[in-house]
Amino acid sequence: MNNFKLKKNDLFVEDISIKKLAGKFATPFYCYSSNAIINKFKKFESPFRNSDTIICYAVKANPNIAILKILSNLGAGAEVVSVGELRRALKAGIKAKKIVFSGVGKKFSEIKFAIEKNILQINIESIEELELITKIAKNLRKKVQIGIRINPNIDAKTHTKISTGREEDKFGLNIETAKKIFLNYRSNPNLDIVGLSVHIGSQIMSLSPFKKAFLKIKNFIKKINKNEKIIKFLDLGGGIGINYKDEKIINFNSYAKIISDISNDLGCKLILEPGRILVAESGILVTRVLFIKKNKKKTFAIIDTGMNDLLRPALYDAYHDIQSIKKGIGRKSLYTIVGPICETADTFAKNKLLNRLNTGEILFFKNVGAYGASMSSSYNSRPIIMELIIHKKNFSIIRTEDTVLNQISREKIPSWVSKIK
Ligand code: LLP
Image (cartoon, rainbow, N blue to C red; front, side):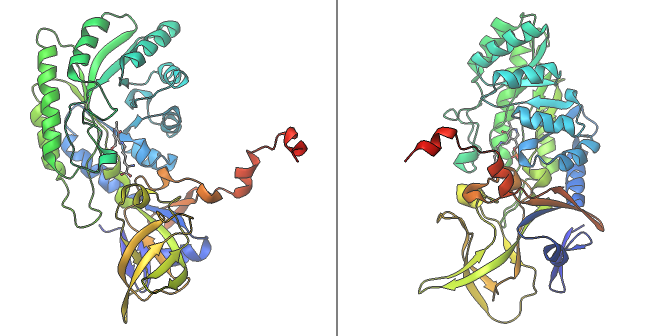
């Protein structure tokens, strides 16, 4: 079912009119369709339903606790990369035994918290990290399940800033180092080194890099498990891309088939860490045109949302379709759509052909449910914006807008400043 429908000069998200919401609440705001998330999760999960697989949603894609709760109710676990994400996942009711903790730079306090909460697995990315975990676990008298994140040196053929599986990337450990870890740390009483993980990047559009990386991991597991089943958990990360602009996406069943082909004779429990694919298409960003400005070269549509609310275009030159809720009639014009932030990078589209835009008109960005709100900031002292979710005929605010007063209240002017002349 299409959860976003343009009709009668309005956009409906499920059964709710965006025109009405934009009349009730100040723009900009994020708005999600719960149905879109539910359907996507079910579709993604279905080929894995009869296998021993935990779908650990990558919280970084969208960490709102309402969204985590929806996914948790559907049976998802979580992949977290900070104590903040871990707290969110627990708060949303995700069981600790369904949570994996990844990331190259975990702090002492984060590791300690994760161990105290008895999460499923910590995926380590360096020997120093493993040493630190050992110390903390010893002090806490705990045994910690460990996964070793492998860097398979495979190019995921995606944007370089979100490629994580090449040798030059900071992520994971090479196979030789992993082998040494198995040899040297396996008998440690505070460690249970039973997992391998791999995540080669995000917004991946073809199966072949996955296939190559998974095969490398499979061969490694076969070697390690030759005489004794040492590796019992295989975490294959996330990374499936979505269609932002006429891109052909990976078929879930083919992805599942690759996974079943490589894992069927390994006898490992599987962990998958999808982020974007589960939530990206569920979200729009609703904004209004503030001003139209023309110069000799361009017509700018200046809108009320900026790169602080949606960073992806500025950071990765990412494409997000922008549409008006109004039905197009009459002549079209080329617009360069920009935000209010004082940077030229705050440009969302260049020379985009749109129906004549007017001041105050409501526009929306598509496919911003992943890495939209989660990457927002209060740059230029713009408050973090509201998030709403629609469920059939109901809408709920799932994050209120921050306020500037709230921002300022955390700041202090030291007393000595008053003496500066
Ligand atoms: N697992 C690990 C270890 C990860 O680092 C990530 C994403 C995922 C899973 C989920 O990947 P996904 O299924 O969402 O592709 N901000 C960027 C994306 C960065 C992804 C970082 N890691 C963007 O807006 O495109």
